[in-house]
Length: 113
Image (cartoon, rainbow, N blue to C red; front, side):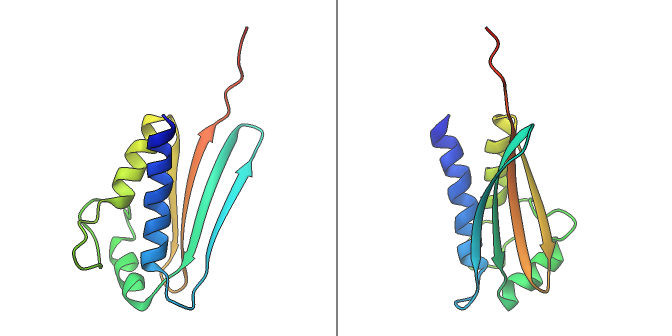
């Protein structure tokens, strides 16, 4: 469902925008391998986000962890669920001193006739 995948990408981009400092950078990349296609969103982290990332480091997709006031900490959890429902995988790489990287990957299916 394209609407759900769009929602997952929007969650990942919103997470990046909220965690990135005003002078920081956000990059969005698409990658196509021989067996999968991926969308990678990487961002610099504000000092507050660095602390939160360090706290959640063992499992950043875990729900109800947020350093942002008024947020439930469900964005990455929702994105991961949507991606899994579409046979994809969400991986998170963090360097608490610098960047947060979320990659959603989906297998390439070949059509059989």
